[in-house]
Length: 68
Image (cartoon, rainbow, N blue to C red; front, side, top):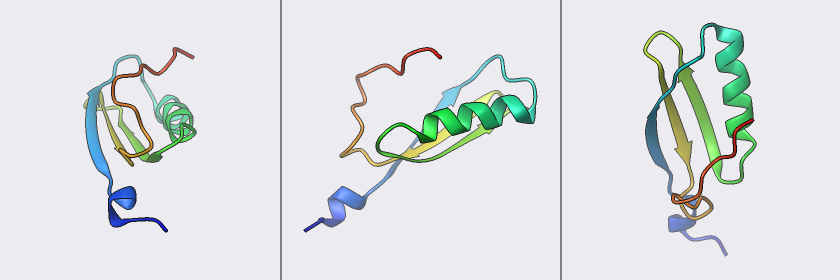
């Protein structure tokens, strides 16, 4: 049985550089969403930010995402 803790989600904000258009941001969002435990990723090109919603019970906060 899945507890309510397993379904809880957190939000993290990141600074993002190098995204210059909606196609770039769409590509980054798509890659981030593929990682286990990710619920949503939204890249804000104009403000150079990324907002990621994730399930902390599935994501290790200390591990790095490998460069693509």
